[in-house]
Length: 187
Image (cartoon, rainbow, N blue to C red):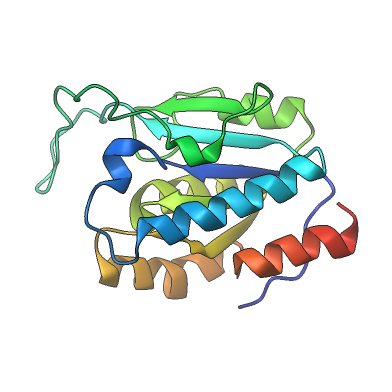
């Protein structure tokens, strides 16, 4: 892992920690992922740094061999898990594609606040998190990935993203390393 620094203008972006997603079988227990995301959110809030809470409430149109239509969602499926303790100043993004930037106001929101870096956490590593990381990188944001605060439905896909994809998009680190950097840098 090669986490080196966090910019003074860094935002935490938490992907799809919502009732319907965390109920799915995953490679790692979602309770631990939620706990770590909550710890990072608390550290960001203590420093007055922005938090973006993302949920998914639909799917992109188009044909795919393994397409999974979300169809009619049950009540509460897209609701964020209560442990995130959403604050009024947290920015909410509801997406209908894998990535949180596509057809949302996320880029505009971050740019308006002068954000130069994002820290990503959530589910699924190889889908929502990776898609958001790729787009953020392409937009010129510095990207940090909290690898112990994410999981996937497919263990191989999770490992592939963490070991092969993420090091090409940004820096990876643990929740503790990220929180320690926040404290050390006085960010």
